[in-house]
Length: 218
Image 1 (tube, rainbow, N blue to C red):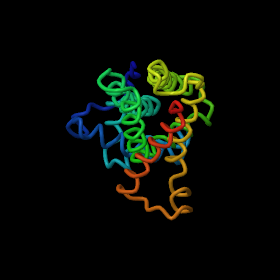
Image 2 (cartoon, rainbow, N blue to C red):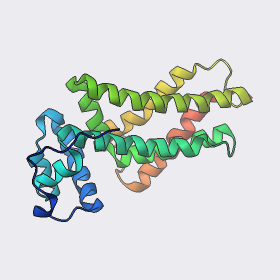
Image 3 (cartoon, rainbow, N blue to C red):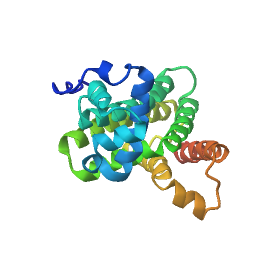
């Protein structure tokens, strides 16, 4: 996706600090929770710069402006899900096994990056049609690939032939995303620890639960 050009009034990067990929990653990591808690409109470049401990001119250099920074966070999150799907859609193994691995890894990634998901939902609620459309475009692409995996399982007889693929995908997305959006509430109310071990167990549990709902009757 094309990034917006940096403003002409921006100072040269050499006046700030050396431009490094590590600095770019630091800015992205600092911006995500701010966007999640305050939204795009409520977050300022100065706040991101302060959280990242960098000169604000570096943000303009790397991302052009605040919307460009948001898009970079969005592209990174979408890319991580796309990488998992790319691995799952390679026809190396049975559809059920590949879908199970994808769901399990997707839950792990989503729980580990919960602020990013909250950021995307916050952006949808803010009503920027352009950004909302970009988020929906990524989501639709991922949904189509998950649906293809389910359809492949149906064609081989692993999943129920009468299964509604679109509803199955919607159910899966709801399961995975709500785990991240309400992790604190869900884990606390069910006496589950918010640690890596429990998240791994929840990832495996979610994959197994979802697959059992798809399985053909034996």
